[in-house]
Length: 69
Image (cartoon, rainbow, N blue to C red; front, top):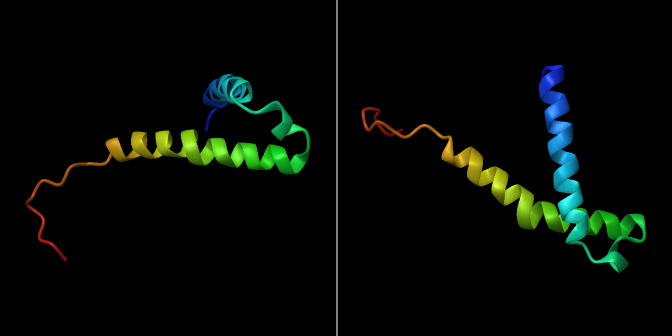
């Protein structure tokens, strides 16, 4: 990844982190265990599915010409 993309990714992740922080229960992020559980919950509930949907939408569509194996 080039430097320009790294900087853009960093900025986007900072914005996502701010949104997820606002949506987190303050009492749940008081220690490392709580932070880890909160992050995992956000990743499984919001981030992962959105990335999966984006990537699956990018899959090439089968042309029907290929024989099934």
